[in-house]
Image 1 (spheres, helix red, strand yellow):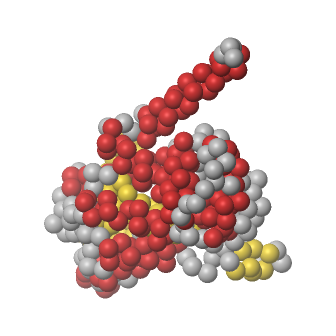
Image 2: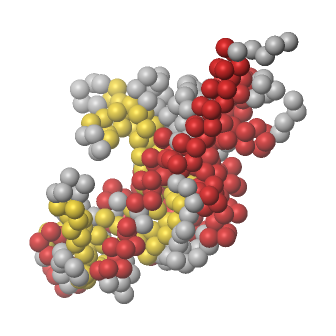
Length: 354
């Protein structure tokens, strides 16, 4: 069967959406009745052609339709644990704050362009490509490119291609260098969470005199106030948001914004859109077989991960078309697959008379 690389990539991303177990080249070949050999699929993943450029080609036409200054760019990272995969530069130990310990797996940073749809427009992988020796003489690995550098690269690339006003992120990326980059170098605004142990000055004069106060001591609830952060040349808005957790307990979130015209309600409403990246993480891991590939080399692993993200875009288009969420669509596909298997079982048990 003669098939182009783009056509095979499309088949692979559609296969990831449909499969419910391990995503392997052999299994995909069987699904296609062996019209495409498993070797050809393996070569596709190893070639590196499924890359960020291929992701952008999939996202571009949708983003052009969504393009609006009302859109936001969400940057966030996630870790997918892969405890049984051999370690390499990509599969390394990373601290996962959601479980409070280091886990072995892939750490990736995504850029999501959100308006009425959530479209991933860029992804970076944290690769620990430098080997070091610690004070105890133990070998450790670290990345030559920091997460903050990846953050800035994703924002810069998105700003070249897309129209949006606000960059959203959690407190991990809320350092002075990133805030200054977004506001002063890129000419954009940000709404970011910030850790409660950060200190601010109430006025420019206080900043110059080194009079710093803890955020949690001054952040007003229900309104905003102007404050100054060390190493930033411009003032920011500071606000406090109190919310209820799923278990009924109260949570507190401190937010900073560079747009001084925003109200407390506007700041919290804009930041609420950041939740879309959590939905994205959950969907690619549950519905697009992101963690379910037995690939062993860095090129093939990265190709599979990006293919899963491309599959997310395709499912997002179906969400808009059908008005069903990703999990509902996946359940529908699996139901149809179960029906097909049931009919196959009946045919085996009761073969038709010759």
